[in-house]
Image 1: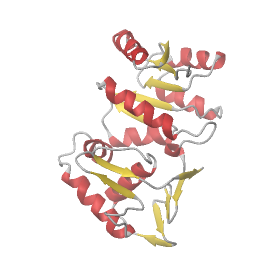
Image 2: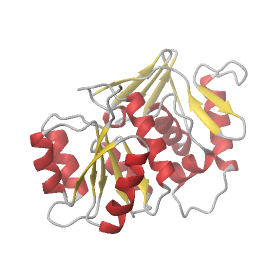
Image 3: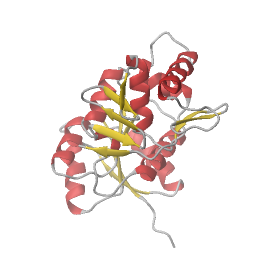
Length: 238
């Protein structure tokens, strides 16, 4: 019998844990619960789960500080943050500090399980998560996230800030089907007054600059009616 994935759910709201833990159990996960960051660290010291789902706003030790302490200890266990903050800069900071993904509250539990499975598919045990890597590379393409520099086929290319942010998110989520709404939320922010057509326009920009064939993509695949997928294998460097 296949061993169940062990998830540590960290949240100080009983309304969340009392409902989400049974849902995740029914979805096939083994679930442990911590009510704040310090309790989560104590549980990590006594046994290693496969994945952490953690709220940001908590007493004693919040999710962001807990995340920093886990990463500073050299532990690259996959972590998904739950946040009520809609600002794209706040989300970007969380990813830079080592989160593998995030989900805004309130959320659909089905969406959470989909994110959990996606994170587990791309995790490399004991290695830096792509979301925390400074340099992302795949055959024919390199993105230096600190310098905000993209190189394709050995030549540096110029992208608009939105297109660069879009490429960055897709490269940190390879082989994952990402909806237009999700990309709109990530790149523009939940309250930004644009529609999903803006996503298509920036995807077209990326394809044009990267010389990516829509019919036979090396980088970005369109999934009709659903969204986009980055199809190249991505490696990350610190």
